[in-house]
Image (tube, rainbow, N blue to C red; front, side, top):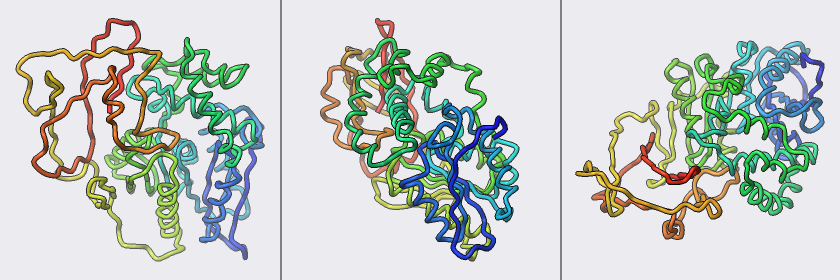
Length: 414
């Protein structure tokens, strides 16, 4: 790298040699185990693959600082690639979650011109948007990921078997950490000496803090190469991935979006990304016959239990519908005749649990919420029975007015 740090990488390539296009994958979780399988799968289909550990992880030198070294290190890695005798000038990037963000970092750097295709799965251009999602700190996900990276550091790169055996202990530590007040001290549960990036996140939590500007790669969406994006309805990053797609779509980029019935870290979603990305890369680099033009947007509609194709996002022909909260727990299309108040008691020692929905751990995305609805700190608003089936395909949003008689209050919408 430009500062003299050396990063560890593995190169996979097809038996027989020759000239093959290159796929670069940069990982903060190590490059062994399931990540090695990524290298084999691409190599078996005519690519050479560089799997690289981010700095400070799995044998790479330096100190791991989440997000903040990926653009420079990614650019330096691409420049190194172009100097190798086996590089044929054709480069694609692939990655999911953090690995996908490292691809966005390269797409936002001067090395972007050397990238001819990308495959991006459950990822986004700006991790600040998720760390402080919708104006609030995402405590459970942030502490859970910090615990994961602490385990990665201890194992010199993620060891899947080790991670599984420690999962129960990690969950207990997570529950302990999220209960710590002040929150700035929660990292002491993870490590006795604390965690550097946790302190950075605590010190730069105010809206508009310029500290985060360096990791905003959003402008790369306006000039990105041909790309296939994939995500899941229950993925924690989906709202921002769709935002990135919209920005690329508005700029006229050749980008496709696939949204399936997946959580963040489930294998079916990752497998779909690999299939679609391989097909795209093979077509782009002349390893297969170019397929007919695919739909710009492909969605799995949950209630109908079927895949549907659309020309754009938002899908053509949608109709917005507003509902209003009413006294007595009603939800109606009618504007209430007068204002009303619904009350609940909030106890920070017994916070409302996130039973279903998008979580980083991969729990079930949906299910029976009856036990949650019976809690005294939960308000439920229900509409009249619908006259027929209705397809609801985002974007969905809510505007809620809240007054609290305490200094600190949490609001959780589902």
